Length: 224
Picture 1 (cartoon, rainbow, N blue to C red):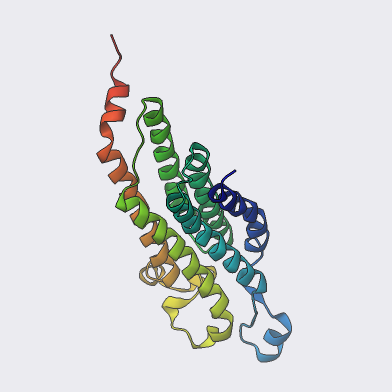
Picture 2 (cartoon, rainbow, N blue to C red):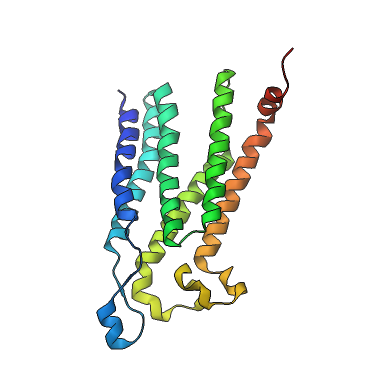
């Protein structure tokens, strides 16, 4: 097995550990301090810090295995299959857990998952026709935006406990967004991050479909 493939498998092996720490609450109330001060108090989210570190390391291996594969001519069919699979498992795992904890809108996660499934299916159809879909710049931007958005959300929940009382309304967590008016709900920090990630993902999917529409069109016509 090549070094590049070993790095990819290492990323996959890290995902269960990431899932464990990422599934822990990102906002933990400090009940004792809150009872004394009568204001919201939070404990430092150690598990979230570990989840962020694991996510960053795993994301870096995505760049590393590609670099190693190209530099040392280690591009393989196994790597072409497993590398994007590992990326999607890591990113979608983080987004699904964000939705569970209220940090990311559930419908946005559904849209992002739909895009990934559609493009993956398109790649399978193209492969059956002996055609390889080259990565587009929009796809690369999409990946960077998704990873960047996830990191921003984690950093937010790590920093928030220490500055909670000094933040303006638009920086409050979604857990307390019901206290705001409808206009303010749409412009909280995490809502903006969610919209940016979702819209970039949608455009990336549209770009793939537009450039490879002939595959779908040919498949819709019954051969005589």
